[in-house]
Image 1 (cartoon, rainbow, N blue to C red):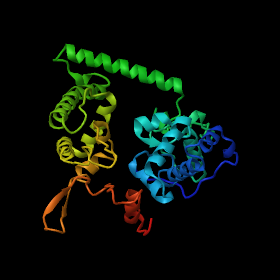
Image 2 (cartoon, rainbow, N blue to C red; image 1 turned 180 degrees about the horizontal axis):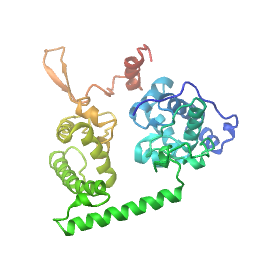
Image 3 (tube, one colour; image 1 turned 60 degrees about the vertical axis):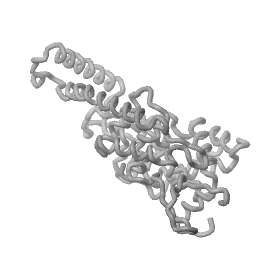
Image 4 (cartoon, one colour; image 1 turned 180 degrees about the vertical axis):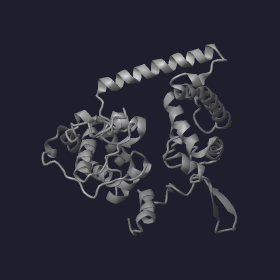
Length: 338
């Protein structure tokens, strides 16, 4: 996802009267710290991608480092912001991003002001053009491509739903005919691309089952077993296969099974799950060996011993609290004395 952020953004003067903000700052657990974290996340949304921010460990650690806060506290504040509606909870759960309808509307306003295309991805979009005050009402000069949620089409919601239903019916009918008659010449049928896609999905299901069996057979003592390949898991796994290839999935599983850190030997006794493994921000880290066991040299006898904490997020008893944040802060910002 290319970064397309803004150099500045405006804030509403009545934001302190927002009931959600009032709930956030009046919680005994967070207080004003909650508002500081929320405003920082909001700033990063506009600065980095314009209308969203990846909801992952890296984003939360950045907040913790900047404000010298505990990462768990930052995570709890972000979850509370989702709970009270400052960010869209569905987008966070399904697409692992922080965004909201008001954020996207404000971003679209800025883009119009500077003659930029908002280019909001369809799966992230929470606004429709006809409901956006900044969308041109005259559609004669704007070609309709049917993708209203992408911010570039101008068909109303009823037309979109109707077209989608008709296409699905046509595709299902053609696919059923193809299964019933193996000699059917599919090239003569309409919606052939959809039929081919459905045929391909049959093959993909076999891949998913093989990966599930491989995971359960090779990581049964290390990680929780996969009981069902849900549609959400298939979608994320298919994306990783398209990005890195099928063989990379198996290599990453093997690598994870050898990582003591991912198996729970860390300060929080956290253990990797399959859902965490297939996220776009986590999979490449496992594949590239970020969580491999590190070899450290003993000063006493010069022998190599394994470091079960992976040397990345280790929290030894001798370290001070928030040492993980301090270590990352020195690396990222070249600061001393965090």
